[in-house]
Image (cartoon, rainbow, N blue to C red; front, side, top):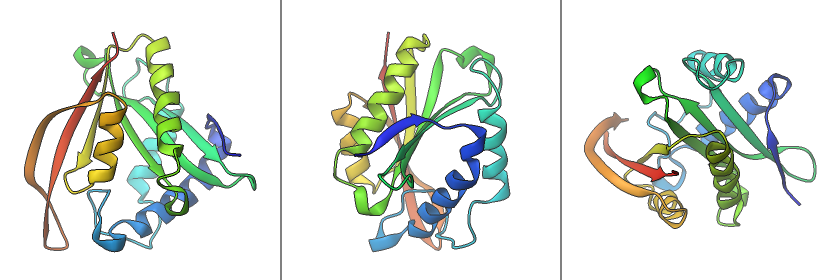
Length: 177
């Protein structure tokens, strides 16, 4: 049984270890899910700082971030989802979603459970919209988001150049209100 709960500052070391594993898998089987080259160097310092500072902030404050982790029977992180605030005050009615699921547990419904958890919190917190960006080639993630009610709002081809590969990105949004 996999349990989902909000992450705390005490979870950051385990979260960063898990995210480092995710980044090392980026590009596995030719599928990029992060707009960066695969790395075995762990989570970049800037990303660690964004998570740490964001989790220490409350919604409504610039850079806030709310993170949930899914824990397997051994207490190991099996997936995560986060919602974060946009930096401009005029967009405070919207939140950005990011997520990941451990490779061995993908296609087992955990992603759906994580999205449901985050959307319930966003609704209860009064957000009107949840937005996300997914790499164009990540068709499985795109299909998950469509099943959850997200609508594609645009695509930017060749947004990233990752190790010489042209990669586009799709923006998706879900109206909550």
